Length: 90
Image (cartoon, rainbow, N blue to C red; front, side):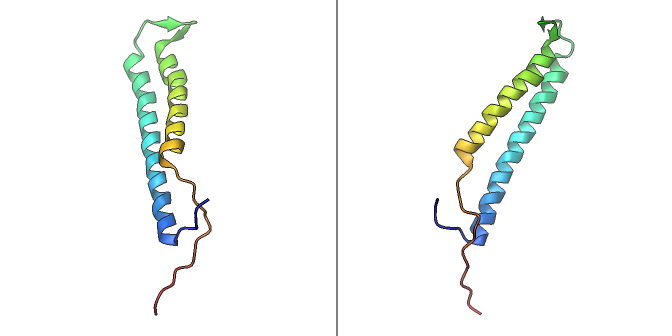
């Protein structure tokens, strides 16, 4: 693990990771509801279940696992939550 970050750096990094997580969550929500809305009138079925179910539930699950993997491997960084003290001049 790296040397502890300053409070300001730790908050900045946490906000960046939270933003990327929010973007992924919004994308997955749009995918889920888009799959339901755009395929609800489809006649295709698989194992007796409609296409919208397969795209939104099963496809959404697979897509969310991929999104979490990308977030963890690409955007999240390992850093200590203990904050080093900043020396401020009075």
